[in-house]
Length: 431
Ligand SMILES: [Zn+2]
Image (cartoon, rainbow, N blue to C red; front, side, top):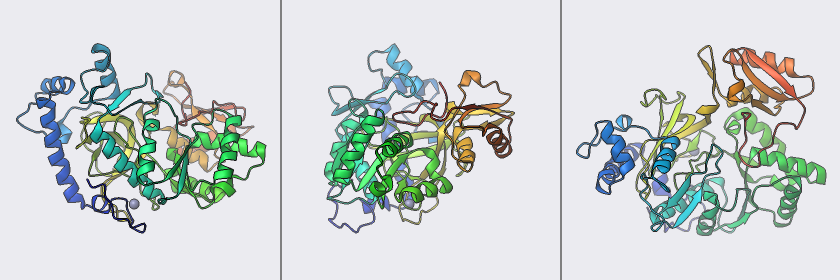
């Protein structure tokens, strides 16, 4: 991996050689990478994986195909940490070797502690420089983001890649309510950032603040790229609608906190989120068997990485995705995925599985009301239960959803702005 990139602002990618490496070479690299990672399991050794793989009848002498390696979930890692406090036996980077430490946001339970080594840090910075370049911002531009600060992993990192591009980072933190959102808007009016990154829940908070302060958001956002975290904007209709409203260019994001700097985005062609194929090997697998599915089919995203200090082998992030290796018109090689939501949020009725995004896509064409799936305990398997904000629209939404989703739907209408507004990631399921 080179870090000395030609000083050519017109180059299409941050790292042209890496990002246009032919797919067959990326796949050969992935196999060679797997062989090196497999050896580390036994040579270091990494007890958690060694025990797991030995139990599956695997050993150091023969490197299996990816599909034949048992998967690991976040719960497995948490259980290992609980049994072997404080940090478990799955780590290859201890606190003494770590150069960065941070946690997840804890949206799904106890925050996971991540400890990244020097190579992790370097690859994270390189990957995120590719992402920044893809946004279309260039050295000398400024970029603001509303990402959590403090112990949240990406906040301990961002300065490094902004510095390498280099861009002026304007970190404002999440808007914790309308008053703080107004402060952010006033700051942006003064500094006029060249790019933005926020979640769709945060955008709603900024919209409320802008309305109260009579600030024209379209004036701030016009002609700017915005990284917007909400899977719905991977789809053409919702994306175009919001882009038309504000005049900005939306880029969608994926990401797995445990992988250093892994916050990939889509390009201007919106063909799925571009994975750095020279570092990360994603698969979409059948959740029951763990075997790879054909391009385009829905399954769990399972990730393997190579070349990092971290060892991540067949990590099942329990997100539902589809994947493709078809060429993208932008010329970047490697796989791309479309993120559809968390497996835990799916509701199955009569064998038909519905994700919040399926309902969101239908509702987007029906006024885009705020909604949530009822809590898992309230789903009885006979009808999909949702809470939708509105004033007398419940019957219409119910009919539209039933027709489009092909399952019985029960809508509970709740007052406008009554569903809890997340300060970071959108929540589509009641808790
Ligand atoms: Zn592309």
